[in-house]
Length: 334
Image (cartoon, rainbow, N blue to C red; front, side, top):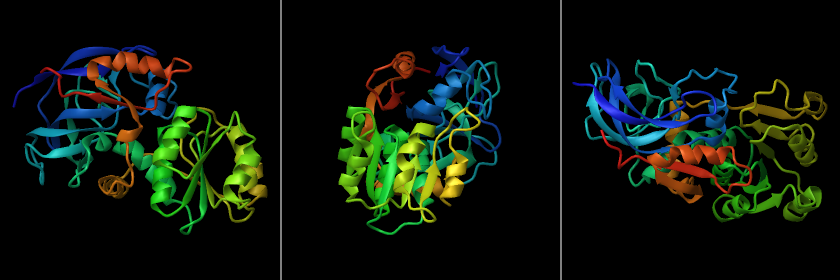
């Protein structure tokens, strides 16, 4: 097998993004090469990485970001079992050596990845949905942690992609879902695709709005995708002391972003979610194939990969209306 040129989205330094030609080596042992059809931006995490503020693992520049893509296997390395050239797959991290490193390496036209980071696409699964499966899995993971019964109210705090997908996952479990956020277009999308009701945290009287929606019932759990003190102050009164649950489902660089004393005083159960694993990914893909978790309706920008610099600029431009951003690589040259 030979090396090949490939197009990639590259962060050359903090706050900069360019399109760049790279040379992809042949897949090594245990690796496959995947030609990307679509990759979806994880706006929150990739924004932190882009600004070199992802404190869990400082960004290595220059790098190729992204950790979710869908495409076709074009080559197999040694010792790869169970996969064939031509298989349609969802892939996470990329793997290669060179001056531009993968971090995590999915916004690229064609790249190697470990066979262990491949997932089969269930029949009928929309490839755009599959291209955001890791982000969808974050929402699934959050909703899976709570002790609830069908008909319970669950509150999602945050109207971004994670919040929307967490709301869908909670509803798939039978919850009645209330989503709190402040962007009108995103709240409308949530009402259409994810939840029973929404509250505008900047325009509505939060307590009165939640009381009107739930009839005064407490919520079984809050899926907190914002993780800010002011968010905690708003939703804590709706969790019953000794029984309420909070799932923290987001990233913040701050060492303290919640009042732990209040959590202890109220004896609230808290969960923390991070990353992905195979059982959760496969469960998420299965729900996607069943139409219970959908990404495509939340994609506001399905654009050719060449538009990537403009898409990242949206992340830093106040007031810009966007939610899901998916890059189409099917016209990429090689």
